[in-house]
Amino acid sequence: MPIQGLAPRHETFHLDPPMYHAPSLKRTNPSSNNHRETNNPFDVPFYQAPPVTTSARPAHTTQVPITTDLGSATYQKALESLKLSDQVHVLGFNREARYLMHCISNAPGVPSPQLLLQHPDPIAAWGHEGRKMVVRNADGSITETEIQKPLYVGHRRAAATVGLAKVGPIRNLVVTDTTAIRACLARNAMLINHETTICLLGEGLGVMEHLNETVFKDPSTRPTYVLGTMSQKLSRYSAEPHTSYSVALRRPGRLCLAGIPREHIIEDGDAPTDISHWPNVVARTRTQHLAKLLSSAPNLNVSPMALDNFMRQKLPGMVFSTVTNSISAALGLTYAGILKSPSARRLWNELLDELVYIVASMPELQESPKIIAYFTGRNFRARAFDLLKRLDGTSSWVRLLRDGHRVPMTQLNGYFARIAEQTLARKEVLETIMAIVEARQQTRNEEIRVDIPMYRSPYMMDSDKVTAEGEPGQPIRLVYINKKPGPEA
Image 1 (cartoon, rainbow, N blue to C red):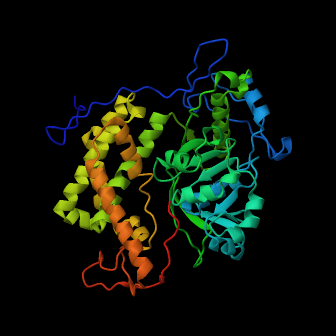
Image 2: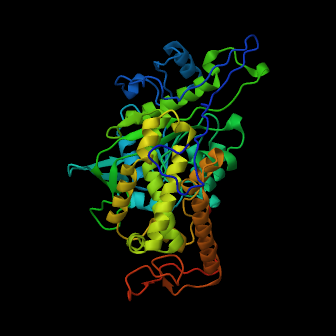
Image 3: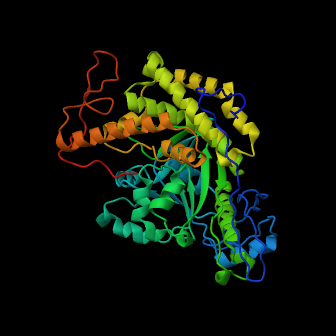
């Protein structure tokens, strides 16, 4: 039967949400047939550690009890055996990465975080700008925090050899920008293994599945994942021209986290006798440890959540971004152009309806009817359309396609397409839009390989003009001479 409150797109289309079976992590004991299911790693009381000083314990390990449903003694044994590291690495150089570096650097009892960069240019700017991260707070005050020298982990291997040696094994990695993340982690896979916890703060979801399919194919050496989203309103701040290591906090918010249990079944002959070595105990310990490190950072306001509540926070922005950016990239229109064109506006509504059906069929939400009702109700559509009317300018996907870079369809469009395939929900409009954007991408890449553009269009191809009528194109800043675009995502 159709979902209540959501009219079907046409008479032949009806969505029956599939039966939901919660993911489980089972341990087989040679002497018992009982199975144990794992819950979300944050479905337990979150541990708030008392204030500690750096002199009270070594900087590289943490051994504190965590109150959980399995008992604090179990987690104490797990912590003692795992010897979890307190060192946090941040991969990215967007506003979120810079703000995280500032907050974690001021966390008591936590070693200074290490910034990892995919581009070498900001490393030189670090010295020129006083080796400090400058943050303009919401109240107007200015805070300067000294940070370590960033390390380059990009694709220029000759220049990165020394940097990689300094990085060493990564145990707590926060990824703020998921663009080209697959290629970056594949190049540095020797630094990441089953002892690593990766927190993904990118715009979309589906990055975890993409990394497991392409980089971390072996479940036994696969890292533990934590999904996150930041609600802090950040913007560019520059007291002086050409300042890179600065950011402005326009509105305080919180960092929402949801741990993902490891889906791994232990064979009978390999079942450990010590409960502190069970995969679910180890994964939950690692995710809570990273959350504890981040929660000690001032102004981050960490909020661990169950997976369904996290989806309620994450999915609205994902749906809107997927619909709006996809239509803009596929049709070559600005945000205002989508509103002015009846055909584009109709396509925008059709794609929005399709994604709402996909969200309503998600297994993670089948036991949360209130969350499904929010997406399928009128308020969500009305708020999405109001937001579209308030947007100005052109989608960021326009610049990425114009410069020959990949757009983040893997973690946005690809995520919803994968859910639709699993739940048998309709995805015709979504797949059509994805095919058009891919065709645009291929056409632009071919143009870059064989031509030298004399003007950079505000959009992607030289024939596309999305500025006001009569406004000339921008003079070129980049000249392509048979040069391949940047690395794929």
